[in-house]
Image (cartoon, rainbow, N blue to C red; front, side, top):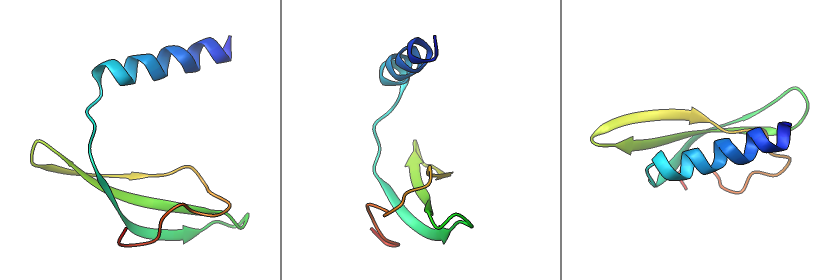
Length: 64
């Protein structure tokens, strides 16, 4: 059941979502040793921030 919900959510996001570029503006190490990234992106002139899921080794650094 969980897999079906994940697939439905992914398809729904792809249909309604907007593709944008984001910039990493902050990197924080968690108490478990992983890293969370804060990303900045813009949609129709409005800036938004979102926090990533934790990464054992983050794919980008601040400024990328």
